[in-house]
Amino acid sequence: MHQKSVKLRTIFMGTSEFANTILIALIENKYNLIGVYTQPDKKVGRKQTLEKTAVKITTEKYNIPVFSPSKLDEEEIAKLKEQAPDLLIVAAYGKILPESILKLPGFGAINIHASLLPNYRGPSPIQNALLNGEKKTGITLMLMDKGIDTGEIIKQQELAIGNNETVIELSQRLSALSIKLILESIPLWIERKIKSTPQDEKKATLCQLIERSDGKIIWSDSAQSIYNRYRAFFAWPGIFTYWEKDGSILRIKLNKITFSNANATEKKHLGEVFQMEEKIAIQTGDGLIFPQEIQKESKNNLNIKEFINGNVDFIGSILK
Image 1: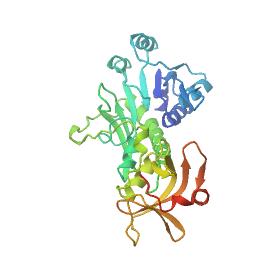
Image 2: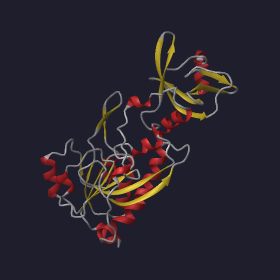
Image 3: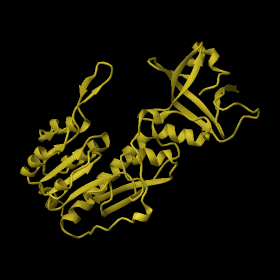
């Protein structure tokens, strides 16, 4: 059964580490990858050095033709058409595919989406599931159409979310689940042994693109909600707040935190930093945040004891 799937002329499209894990599995399972599409090299850091995507690095390692067009214009579509793909496999590519591309492969364009569609359509389903405190998520294999994650479902599998799981940990488990689903389902899809079914539009929910400003802590939120934000944005952009020190406003990142739903026995201001037995606590709208690691902008990350040793006036301040 497996051999029939891997002989097909397959093009993979993906960019992130999540996509890269799936690509490696396709290579190891000897899928006939005739080309890989990924986002262009990106300028990173202060020196603005060009950095390749994880997918591009893997593709070059295995000597598979790789394409990084900035736009999928008519010229690029013509190049893709010349490759005569039988199947497209897409995972976190980061570009919307024109309908003319989706119609090229006889077996369609299959997208691997990290949610239980129609929930969390859009670019950041893993982060949004964590942000909203979901207890479960999953993977959907979907036949792509011209909409954003609106195509018919080929296969789905659910996954429970751990209470303290971060976006990095959850992404790794979801990519492992994706591999299992792909390797089981694509041969059946090729042999017409499974069918796709339409999504229930009434149950559709959307998620937005994550921006750096989304990491801002709102101290009137509950401690649980802030902790969920920390888990969701652990990889990027992280969570941050503002601290007024010596007449300056400093942006500080809370790189590691724990929380409690209980409040201090004494009433505190929102965002107030105080000593609570052996811990440093911050008051929220409901419950307490306990910072474990803090980083001032452009400075090193410090554990809470080191940070307090150098910033005694942090205790008693009110964060904004």
